[in-house]
Structures are given as C-alpha cells and as structure tokens.
Length: 584
Picture 1 (cartoon, rainbow, N blue to C red):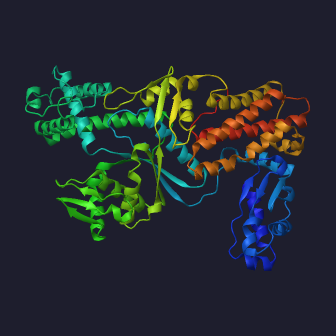
Picture 2: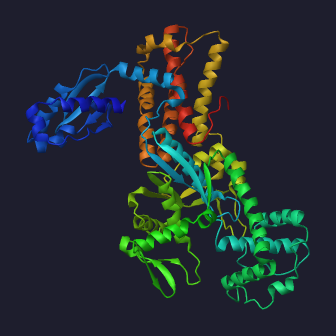
Picture 3: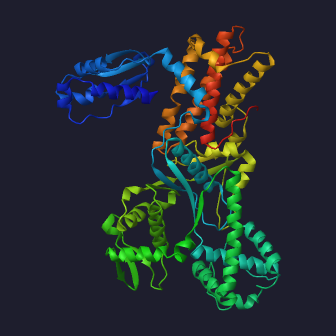
C-alpha cells in the first residue's frame, strides 16, 4: 500500500508546473509515512516542505500544487494540507478491500518484493568445531536464518554459509583432548590438562574412536607427560597444552595426529549439521578454512598485498599496514615461524567471497568480534575491494535462566547447555521466536519457563493460537455445512465496517512494509513484534464478534478477513522459522 501511494506522489512530482520543476533541480524520492493519529489520515508526506526552499515557495502553496497534480486513484478518498505543509492522504475503503484481495490471491508470496538482482552472502554461526552448539550459538543461528529469509523476501538473492575453522591451535587442542580421553578409555590414569576440552562429548567421541581404531593409537602415557612444563594452576596452562600438543605430534606422527583430529572434526561437524537441520536452519555451503590453505587462496592474497605494497617485514614477521586503512594498529599476517595467521585467512576468505560475485558480504558474529570489523574491512580495501561491501552484525550474548537462576556456559570446561538440550526443553518454535525477540545489539535473557508456558504472556504461543483459532473457525464452518468462496466475498467487503475490522485490515496492510523494514534494518525482531500485535488485534476481534452468521454475504466478508489474517500470520512465522499449527 505504501509503495502504491509513493508511486502516485512520484507521478505528481513529475506533473508539477514547469516553473516549479525548473527551480526544484534534482527531484527527491517522495517520503511517505503512516500517520500516528488516524484523524490525520492514513499516510502523510513532507515532500512540499523538502522542496519549498529550492523552489523558493511557501510549502503550503507547494503542497496545493502536489495535491492538484496527484493522478486520480480509487485508492485515495481525500487529501488535505496540514500544519506547515504536510500532505495527508485518506485511503478509500476500496484500497483496504483491495489489500484483502491481494493477500488471499498472493497467498505465500504476499509481502515479497520483486527481485532486485543484488547477491548477498550471509555467513553466520561459524562456531569453532570443537564441541556441540550451545544456546549462544543458537541465537546466531536463529537470527542469521531469519535475516536470510527476510532478505530473500525483500527481493535479494541470498547464499547462506558457515565458515569452519578447522585449522589452527583450537583444533590441535581438540585433537590432544580427544586422544587423551581415548588413552583413558584404555585404562590410562593421569591429570587431564587444565586447558583441554573436558565436555562429556569428548569422552563419547573417544569411545567411538576406540571402536574404530582399537588400540592402534595407544602409547605409554609416562612418555607423553615426561618433562613437560607445569600445568595450571601452579604453572602456565597455555605453555603446557602447547607442549602437550607437540608431544602428541611427535608420538603419533603427523599422520596419526591428523587421524585423531579428522575423526573428532567429522563427529562434531556431523553433530552440528544435524542440530541445525533439526532447528530448521539451512546452510548452502560449509566452507573449510583448511581449503584456503590447500587451494592457494591465502598465498594469492598475500601476493596481492605485497604487490599493492600493503605489507612490510618487522622482527622476522610480515605485517599488514592496517593503520593505512583506519584500523587502530598494524596486524601480523605471517608469523616468524612462517605460519600464516587467522587474520590472513580472514582476508583471503572475504576476498574469495567477492570473487564469487557477491555484492554484499554480511557477517553475523558474536559481540566479542567487535575489533574484527575494521581490520577485515581494511584487508578488503587493501586487495582492491570496496570497504562498504562488508557489513557485520554483532550478536550480543544470551543469558539463560532456569527457575530464576542464570545458567553458566563454558565450552572448554564442558559445563554448558547445548542448543539441542534447549530445543528439547522448549521446542523449536519457541526457541526460534524467543531468539529474535530482541535486537541483535541487545543482550537477551531467555526465560525458559515463559517459553514453555501456554498463555497469552508467551508471544509465540499467542501468535500460533491466533492461527489455530482461525483454522478452527474454518472447520466449524465446514461442519455447519457453510461454504466460502473468495470470488463471492469480493462483492461484499463493504460490510466490514466495524472498528475492530478496520483496525485489522490496517494492520494487515502494513505487512509488506514490515518485511521491507525488517530486511533493511537487519531486524527480525520488528517482524516478531508486528506478528504479536496482529495476533492481539485478532484475539480482541475474535472475542467480540461472531463469524459464522446466517447472512451469507456478511459471513463471506468476515471469513475473507480472517483468512487474510491467517495467511499473514503463516507467512510471517515461516520467515522466522516457526510453524503455524492448525490446532493447539
């Protein structure tokens, strides 16, 4: 609806008197906003006030010219000039009736925008494959998946990607931890490293490794721990774990150590994939960091940086001139020992995304990656890519509450609540919805008891109940022997003149605008709040009216209205990855 009114103002702008257009210069895009007070109409434009200065005219006089130039349209009942020069637009009843027609005819595609041709790659979750996903990762998953759906609905071509950090120190710690648990499964007794991964999942994977490899990887643990530096708390736990990793590599050989690492990586990645699939989160590609090394992407990126004179050598390492691009300090890309850094991989990965033809690289990361944005953007610019091609949305943390007490989470210690455990407790629908109830830049307190409750205080239950109630009305209609045809209903929509009915139709007409705004602002919570408000409007209407009246013409109109409500609720919930049940 908003776009249609805006189109009328665009036409009016072009039809202004020649002398006015000559003074105006470059014509602006008309801004159309919904009015807060229905007595001021449905939409308002400040276009006359924006043009008044360049046109050297009184804004109210210019508003009068705009109104005179507006093409005749059955959408508009009347217009008026308000205040210093606002143009208020009052829609006709036919305009809103047309909206009901559009909703029912468009069905699942209602609210979707035409294709824009813009290609966006959304990288989200990308949790280190060192353990199962926990509830914090779940928020990244729900937000990234919902945002991707919204971007598609807004007309973009979207590709969803998970970057697998399968190279580097954390994976080596995982392999060492898994091997030690494997040795324990063969009867070895020792103190487990302070910095090792201690979750029960490591023990389970070690048991699986024992079944596959028997005792082929068993060694005398006395030789493993001999002459290592002291572990924490009395010693340095980082030095200890690094020394232990080197000992494991020496003892097993690179091939044996690689077998352990690959076994653990596959088990954990398979678990993550299954978890996300059960959560309704689709990933188009799992991009392994290891591939950047094997396919030469990092070497090519470093060669490009050298050619552009954006790196220098100092203290035996290779540094990227990040400060030349606005970062707070220069960054190491190649260490003294010749190994490339995570940062070098990050530059290569994002450059490779651009080389795949994506216009926008949209990363969804944890809030602890705040310093990451400037350096990666600097790396892109240094390779000749536009800095604005990178957009990063930071996800703040989740505080999980059970019985009023906060649950602590730590992947390394193993004391954490997994996403799978959360889903089993509250269900996928509640988890997906609650995760996007607040903006990504705000902390989220996840109330388990509320998420499980069957009450109007639980927003996802309240919205789904509205959908189920409408399905129940349709079933009752069938049981009573009534039939309903949309084509017949179009002739009687003028009967929808109750205040509750008008409020519902206005709410429904806002849905395409909500989709556009949610996608533009990267804000799934905007859609979530809209659906809750729409459900509230419907429940209020339901409690005050009867739908299955004897008057067929009125009944047809009433059913058309609630069918439209049902369709919009189903469409909105689908974008958020939430089901729309027919009964509850």
